[in-house]
Length: 638
Ligand code: ADP
Ligand code: MG
Image (cartoon, rainbow, N blue to C red; front, side):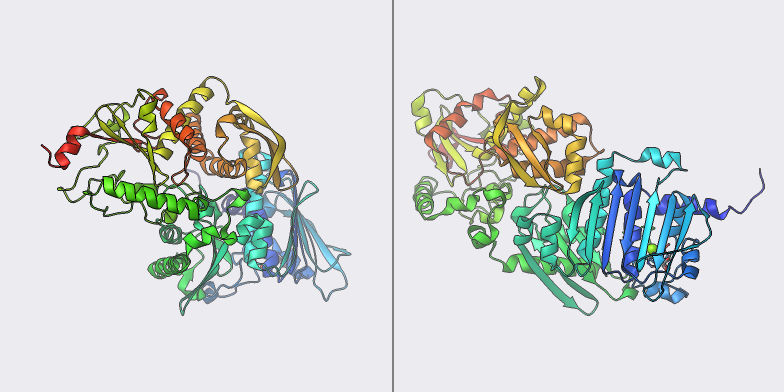
């Protein structure tokens, strides 16, 4: 075995760089944090080629005098802590003193700095860790740090970098996190000479969210507050109807630093339970303040994870703060006011509960009550409430449905009629049947049959076949039909698309633009043509014909989020299944949509076209049937 040697400082720094400097975005984060620690009120970020060519951060902070500048890039050199006990009272963003040293070891770095009270500045250049002598230079006060050719001497790292757009997406995300936490400061972000963000100092959090995301999102936020001696929570949370497909729109900050935490993530999800669909995620911006000695920030090199002395307290307080706010807000009423109007001018499903339809529903309810008078009310809200779409939120079902039509578990009261779908949804996939409840093939015999269809609660279609009674979940059935059509078309080539007369322009994040560019081929196969239109918008030029009922803006936004979320995690067939599934769900009629007679007819006549009429793409039943024999048994006629 070779003799043990102490590694050179240069090599140590390169190894440390592997931890701290993962990609250009990590450099941007570290440098912006340094600027904030230096008290800067203005921070400009300039990027070229996704940070692969150049990253430049200029600030108007305290600057460094020549002696400090000479030391700034030495490893473990920091002005922020001096003694052990300082580690437990950290109020600055940095403290490890290794960011500059690490970055300098894997790039060409150049710093120009001047404290406000000096007449001249100083410059230092470091290339791959070797430092040039300091030179005096004219400079305005503050610090300008320029990084060129990141990873020039670590080819493995360099090869690992993704496309310019992907790297830029990560940079924008880091920029966003810091800009959200420091609304008092002015920030700008430029890419290849183009301005991506220009944020004035002193914005309110709501204004900043509007600038960084979309104005619609900012308009519909609810504020939360909770104060406890150990933990103060404040922030803005989005209305449930603005849920997203992934957790990337959940921003949590602890003492001014963006963090990711499993407990907090769980509490957020839990607080929206029952208000949004199971596979959706709420949008929140939360700021936690805790005494620095109750949390350890020194557990992760990039400091994105922390360790709480009392994580249960954090979980329960976050849950309580959000839940209280959500429950004290009349979400149903709010949905009908302009305040929570649907984005993109889409009529909200709540509109269907206007005066006239309420009267109509009342009549139908009475008729149904007479018809099913022997059936007790359900123990739980009906399934229509739990699988409502984003435009028909579950809390908006007004508890009006009174039949346990699609409960996944049988009613507890065994003397009650069994209206349950087959327990195993795979059994529901064909025409196989349990003795009592069968998913019968429905072949409309003649128009009379279709004319006896009744739409109840704008959610279910009730009709008859030779054997008895059939109840169809209109959304689930339509979703299933669309899924079949979409996947057939997709497998035959590409989805038929319709060119829009006027392209629809939507606001997007840089990450969404990157996702669009990374998946341009797939998008085209899906019948979606779009291109970047200005720094933070996309113009949708064509859209799939089959999605005529969906809002292109909402669909494209969600689709791009999903592509970001699934990046590198799924195979192509899985991804395609997810996308088609999402398309079908968005384009299908919703629970809550009143259907015209011809729409009902069209839906039912298409039912036999699909291969597995009994279940929706998620495996939930679309149809439940009740035979005459069973009815007779329930009415004790036998
Ligand atoms: P840390 O932030 O953990 O202290 P860094 O390597 O990031 O370590 O920075 C080293 C030191 O360089 C800091 O402690 C600070 O004194 C100085 N420094 C870095 N960036 C700036 C800046 N933009 N303005 C003023 N001083 C800075
Ligand atoms: Mg630092």
